[in-house]
Length: 605
Image (cartoon, rainbow, N blue to C red):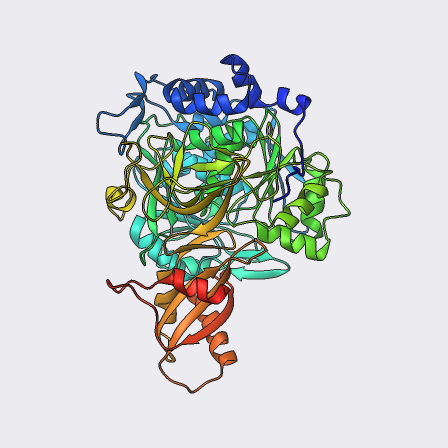
């Protein structure tokens, strides 16, 4: 890393930031002192943050944090009543809260009042359909105005929303429906991408959804099953709906994140989780009233709900582009929507740099970028910064079970591409080596409690997943997360992937075992190991498959093609296989665990 920052903060940027405002409130003169204070005086920090965000309560909390059941199971906003959706409508009624553009269409806007009315008609439609508080609904949609409104409506009606990415196959949709069992699933007839029409309703039908509400995209109506209904026949005309008030620990969303077992972890978000998202957006992405926030994502990934809450609670405007974020039309959308904060995954930037497709557009309205989902490449991040006239990139790393980030950057610190300048405000972690000693490189463990972190899992034992057999640090309980981090000489951090069997591919977290379970059904595969290989120059990991041969009837090219097809059809077409390596046997530990780190190291040599 260069000793000279690529972007230097300034007195003007600092004094206009949300962080500076809160530093002054607490008579703190520098950021490091502010972060230390946010951890040392955690309850005061979160109480001030909740107040600054304007979180709406029907009954105020007795205390911000209760740890009677231990730091492994903290109760935040103790004994309060709220519905977090109420806090998403604090701007003026005529404020623009969504700017959107369909592929090949023109820029459109929706005001806060229009969004609220749409949310209420959907919530009333849910009640009219016979659903009760606590019943789950599902969303398998691209990130559209309707998707945002359905998401908010379910939560407002006290009905947890099960979110499923629109890129998943029927098999993977079915797995998630079987775990969460939503009563109704919202989807579209098709997905329109780059002039193509990809089936979506039929995928959800094949996944055996109980009842489906279909938003039509095509001009010609499709045939529905007898139990399914079109969008216009579902929503109510009643634009009045009073939110269902619940405890902070009531489930509002079920998100899925791949761990180290075959089935995805079903992670409940509660009414308190979005406060973490909004807090990070306020402090780290520095979102202000009427800022325009664009982050190409989906409600099936945590950045979808994050985008909704971090933007709306901070009285910002969500920018939604319905097409792929790769070509000219997306660049023009960023310019015309006057986006002020653009979120990316590094794969986007790599394509933009190679194609130079964004260089013709005026992105100077952008105040900062943010990058997450994959390890980034410094050269590509410098290129991204230059696209907006040298603006900082807020590197951001966290997890679905955190509701936001644990390590990130700020606009009040100098920016070195592909590095994190700070632990996230209000939380802390420690890096330990293989002997559980504090180290400059090693496994990152969170130090609970931190507002937003999960307390339960739908389909696994939460304590065993995150706390069982974790080491202690200075007599503190630690929470497992699985990321590997390094501390640089200047105190900044860099990420270097996972230490467990999970990996990030194209910004999507998936377990090696999920991929291997598909590959091991192929006739020529006796056993396999899926490994994420990080390029030596930095940047997104590449998926490499190691396998032990069962039969020798086809070429490597044919085998690679079979593997790609199987992953595309049974898991996700976004998971791209970079290489296929035949070996005589998989390296294993004494307990028969595959040593993926050994395979990774041998490939990189």
